[in-house]
Length: 228
Image (cartoon, one colour):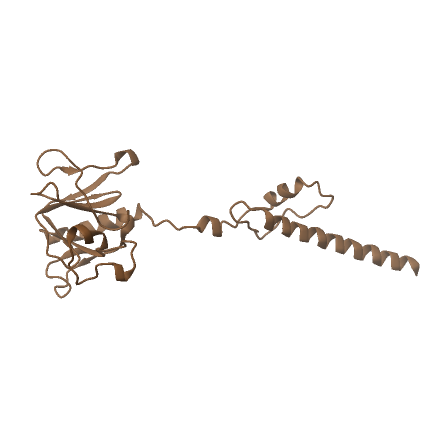
């Protein structure tokens, strides 16, 4: 699920801690108590505790166990430390959220909206620690966790997996028991897409035809020379 979402899975007494997906390797990286959260242009929510894991950012209310928010690092498109009072009244860690919606479907920077129906439309949040000196630490941890969650590039392997060797070319054509021999010392790689050898076959077929053409020329030349 893209974007910001409610998070209520807690374990332990008191305010508790978030339940992590340990089966898939999720680990807790940092806990920052005394942190307020600001969703879009709404009023700050506090007091709360920030939990940063290897997979997501979780904020849990210290007074209401039914209130909490989370966003996966894959949905965090940008994060930065903000100390400019013109941007926001308190020093904070600012994050932009990719919610998978078009711009006109998102909340924007000025709309409030109903929390329950519009949460997934939030496109930005601010994390405001009671101790501003912790901002650089939070930023660094955000960077480290973001690196653990690189954005998947759809179709990259299918579209750009173009490299194979001369030996692979030779093995492909060996099955056809060609009577022609070719140089196995190609200096430039030739490619195929997603295991499709049609291109390799076409290239080698062209080499076959070129070789036949050259041999035909030689035979023709020898024949003419033999008549003189």
